[in-house]
Image (tube, rainbow, N blue to C red; front, side):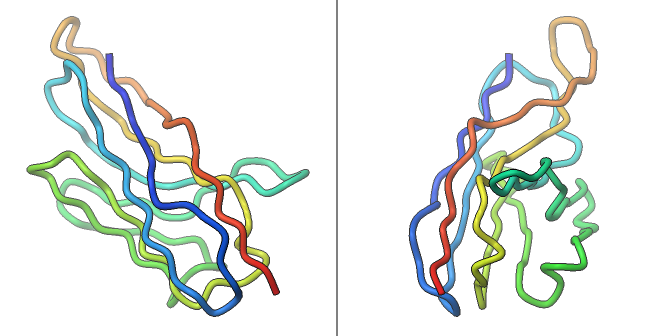
Length: 121
């Protein structure tokens, strides 16, 4: 009932920047928190950044000072601006959101399909 679509991934060199976007669509009453996870080859999926309705943000230690998460509530869209990219940032990046549905009033977590970010040395 909620779809998340990520865009903006690609192949870049170390030191470059990328901006990821994730738009939420569907039959929901509201979206609570939105965020980004990533999964590198052979690794588990880890949290990168999150943002609340009030704009409060959290970041993984590995990306603090380099990545910035933001949201446009009117467009139900979350962004991740990634600067000074490093080879260790290479991963599939997944958008996630917690939404309250109109039908049952239940709150569920949803995931996007993922977008590949590859950083060469």
